[in-house]
Amino acid sequence: MGKTKLTTESVSKEKVEKATEITSKETQIKTPKKKVTSGILFVDATFNNTKVLFGDKLGNTLFWSSAGTLGFRGAKKGTPFAASKVGDLIGEKAAVLGVKDSGIVVRGVGSGREPAIRAFMAHGIEITSIKDATPVPHNGPKPKKPRRV
Image 1 (cartoon, rainbow, N blue to C red):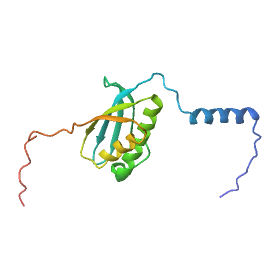
Image 2 (image 1 turned 90 degrees about the vertical axis):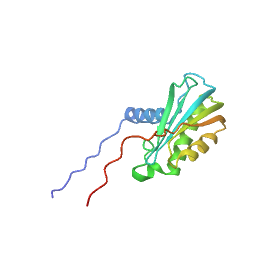
Image 3 (image 1 turned 60 degrees about the horizontal axis):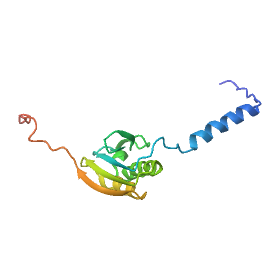
Image 4 (image 1 turned 135 degrees about the horizontal axis):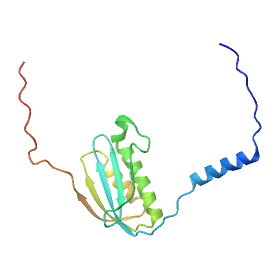
């Protein structure tokens, strides 16, 4: 193809200062608006993903994350490693908020149940109770007819 012309552009000090301000704001950890000493951790572990939500004692959501939001794609979202990363992130946020103890509600049969809880506990948060709330079908819908070949 044709030749491309390169131009040199002088960068002013104002542009550099604005760029450093933006990056410094993004890297700072947000200070909590309110102090919460206890809460409930909801772990939803499916075969394809692991979602973790932290709420106060009334069940109001404070923050949440999942393996997909951390950048895991496809089959890697359902792995124990991805679940431990999600639990680690939520535990870090809870520790910044000042959480001392938490109850846990686990839902689902995926492989990320225990790793998410272990990573959450690693931040010095005491676990008061663990409840399994996996939905169980009571016989469900009528099965399909047998296939005739």
